[in-house]
Length: 235
Image 1: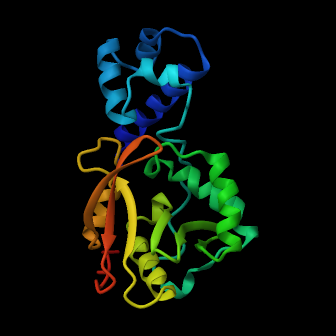
Image 2 (image 1 turned 180 degrees about the vertical axis):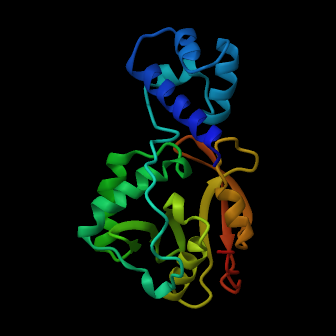
């Protein structure tokens, strides 16, 4: 994600909040967000949120497209293995949720309150994996063991180019019966709101399956064959 993309997404997130929490005219919000016309604002808002500003306001259901990212120094760890990934404990919950906020761009329509409630269940049922570095969560995964479905996977923005996604997939495969097919849902092809998640999954060997709607948002299910060897990403 470029700086321009980040700024645009932050502006649209603030605009979305104002649409729900204020009675400011849409044109005023558009101009305050840096757009020269209401139509230009509507076009980019719909591309990102899959609904017009007027419809978003009427629905009164706000969710952020991008929250603030406060980056730290260079990652302390550069060469992780799947042995560094462990099952999460309740004491990890706060750091886990902090990472969720940093990676909200990968999960449109995410309800943080509902998510935090479900996280405790995942932890109790040993369906939550975490990797920590320098006292913080840098990678997390929630999954359904019976189906091989990945319900949530997040990597810290500063660690996304270290092969962490493949590492988590490898770890999950080792925890499930041999040959289990892994699946997840992500953005559909061409979605302007996608900051690179779909491309990464396809590069790792996931194949396209059916188109779905999740929480009203258009997504696509991807699957990774149980016989597929996960190729390491460049570091």
